[in-house]
Length: 169
Image 1 (tube, rainbow, N blue to C red):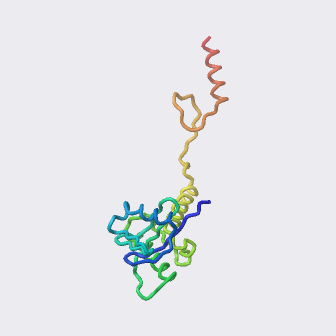
Image 2 (cartoon, helix red, strand yellow; image 1 turned 30 degrees about the vertical axis):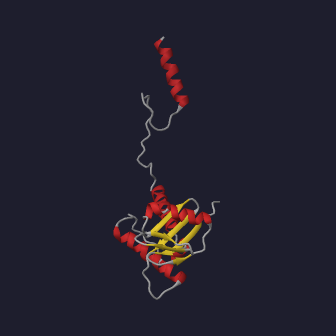
Image 3 (cartoon, rainbow, N blue to C red; image 1 turned 135 degrees about the horizontal axis):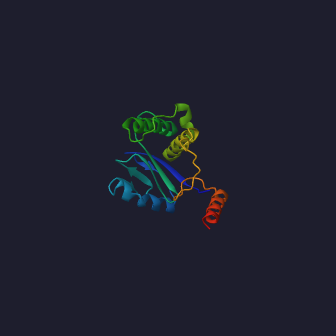
């Protein structure tokens, strides 16, 4: 199991963090994605990110950047509220084509992690397609063809070839 360090911060807010050297190196490498002027990591451990909301993962460090929307709410409750609003913004913008937004009761299972949410969307869509039976339009055809399409019955094919060769002689 990969031990991924998940760091949750708010956009346009200085966030004081205690980071390992590996996490600092990974965060600084994210400047190429976020922008040189949009990611500032101070020597005292303060991280400031602007003009970016979402998640980025480099090596074993995942950075979750929430929009700063709530004024009077602090801590975990602020992160949960921002996560809910971020999901609604994604669905209303049409950026993500899945129309099924998780209920507030289901939001807790993702623990504010966007990657987990997207994986859940992918799995739900895959199961939906699997239940619909993807291959329901498959028509079984047993004939001697010059190309391969579908399942090959080797014993039947070999018998036909042997019979045809014998009848030619």
